[in-house]
Length: 103
Image (tube, rainbow, N blue to C red; front, top):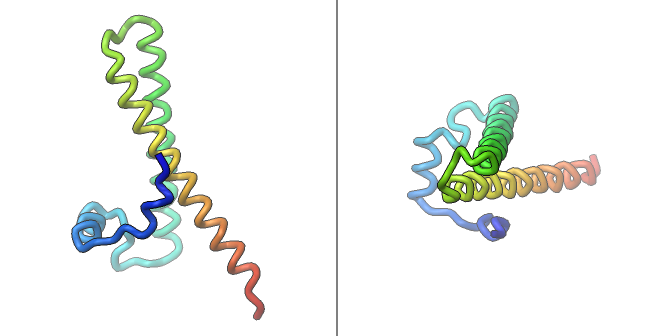
C-alpha cells in the first residue's frame, strides 16, 4: 500500500477530525509541540510493531487459534511503519531544501 498518494487529500471533515483528535498542532505551533507529536507517532509505531511480534509469537506457540488477530496486528504495524517512513522522508527533503537556501 503506497501512502505517498495521500499527500494531496484534504477536506473539511479530515481537518475537523484531526483537530478533535489532536492529530495536528492547534494553538501551540512551536517546534517542541511538533517534535513531541512526531515522537508520539514514532512511539505508537514501535508499540504496534511490538504487538505484531507478540501476536506472531503467540500464534507460533499455539496460544492463539485465530490467525486473523495476527494478520490485523501485522497490517496495522506495516501501515504505521510506512506512514512513519513517509513522514521521515518528507522531513529530510524539507531539511535538504532549507540547507540549499542561500542567505
